[in-house]
Image (cartoon, rainbow, N blue to C red):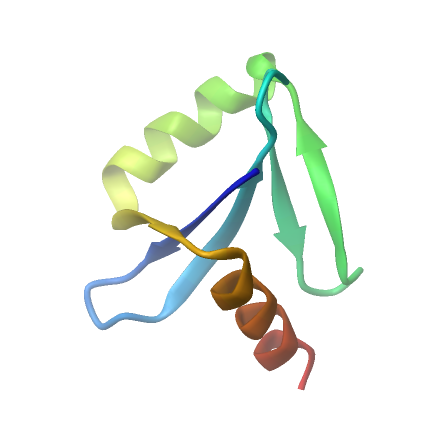
Amino acid sequence: MIYQKLTTSTGQCLLLIRKHAGRDGFELWRRKERCWCYFNNVGAEYFKEFFDMRGELTDISEAEALELIKELRE
């Protein structure tokens, strides 16, 4: 499993992303619902353009992803 975060130039996390090996598409963490939401490749094209325009996309560890989720819940 691959975790990534999209951040602003000031380092604020905009999106938390999870990708599964061998599975098309990706999942985004939904803050309000506190769950992962799956997007197939059709939805992925829209987000790819957003990622390219908005900020820095970096790989993170599962532990860092879980810490971000914990912070977002508070």
